[in-house]
Image (cartoon, rainbow, N blue to C red; front, side, top):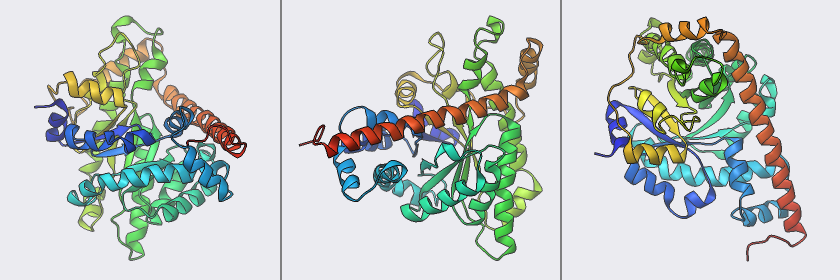
Amino acid sequence: MIATQALREVGQGIWLDFITRRLLAEGTLQHYIDELGVTGLTSNPTLFYQAISRGNDYDDSLRAGRERGLRGEGLFFQLALEDLTRAAALFQPIHHQTQGEDGWVSLEVSPLLAWQPVPTLEQVLTLHARASLSNLFIKIPGTHAGLRAIEEATYAGVPINVTLLFSAEQYLAAANAYMRGIERRLQDGLSPDVRSVASLFVSRWDKAVQGKVPELLRNRLGLAVAQRTYRAYCALRASRRVQHLESEGASMQKLLWASTGTKDPTAPDTLYVESLAAPDTIDTMPEGTLLAFADHGTVEQVMARDGGDCERVIAEFVAAGVDVDALAEQLQREGAESFSKSWRDLMAVISEKREALEEGHGVVR
């Protein structure tokens, strides 16, 4: 049995954290769906920057967008939605078979708006209407400012992927914002069936403390934080509040593991995927991690609903001088800044390619 099938049998969705036009055009994504059990896809500014900057795959669309007068963010969202519309169509059978539980793709709002709830919400509503896809999540950063946009977007009926979460506390804040939106819909006689996922970033924890803690603690903090968050997730799912919402027709926001590629070259390339196997969750993997796990990964046990030894491990990091709460805030801030930099780089490369096409250079013939 292929290792990815073992994750499916555990009850975990497998999403690809990667997108390029070539992945779609050459049938690679369809192959991953058919042969590796991939059930969804996520994207972010860094992925699109890499896809657009490397080669000429997007030149025809850039030329068409230029002829329509599109530039900057408007041109990018046109390119992104072309790709994600094709990807969404490939996942539509899964979306239908699972009655909306799986088969999603994700598009991120401008990370420059991470601390501005009103402009974020405006862009969310615009993108949702423009895309008109039943299986598209719009990604909103789970910053303090983003919580308002998450609640309002949920109330407006927009499926949301809450991104850039780094702790159980940040996850619960996002889950509460989502549930407030659902509860307001119920109060106003609207359907409570608005789907959502909450994305917890894992491996960045270990990169942040590498070389700053004893070697015995190497690559253990991210998984301990994930265990603590999974415990909070399981407790929330069992709460009266969630049970009441589900009895009214709502679907519980799912926990998604993000940043699951191994950043430490001395660690197994399947470290996080193997350790994060858990029912009713999703693991979104970089392409290399997906292929590595399919080739030689194993699922020996699932995550403990009670968090296992997470508190003991986190206490060891605290004893080593790590302020875990402060680091969670720092990682979220740095994550938003990193995506903002990628966004600016993305806008720059789109502008450069657009100008080159206008001058008649770099055109695919």
